Amino acid sequence: MTEIIHATQVAIAIVIGLWIYNRFAKRWTATLGDDVVSGYVNDVGYVASEGGGSILVSYGYSVAGIRFYGAFSPSMWSVAGVSWKTSVYEIEDKMRQEYPKGYEVKVFYFRGSPTEHWLHKPPSKWAIFWKAIWLPAVILVLTNIPLIFINLLIYLQPR
Image (cartoon, rainbow, N blue to C red):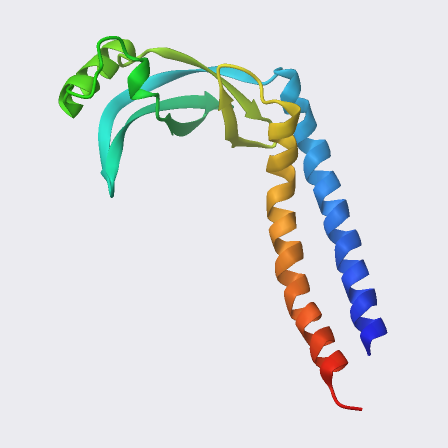
């Protein structure tokens, strides 16, 4: 019975490995920076959260006539004149001055799925690698846990 479990694990690993290669090969062209559009800032606002909050800069961009949106959170400390005493409203106003509506951002995107995008510069090879591997790796772990547990139960079974 354990041979069947090991064969199943090997088959799952091979299928997931091919899936990772497929995801990686499709995204590899994004590192060249050929797929780039201009995006424009829509709004700057404070988003409250547990334990603090952050300033979010939202932007939109179009690929093949379809509109996509994204947001990033710039460092509050990169704005000149910000100290611990500066209120959130003052920081938000300074960010609005730094990123006014219509401010242009360069958006590099993955041709197969324009929702996967990077700002200002093309993604690194490592960013593409982790984008390609994270989902298959999670599925590999989740599918192997029950098989390992079944194998353990068979091993611990009295003979």
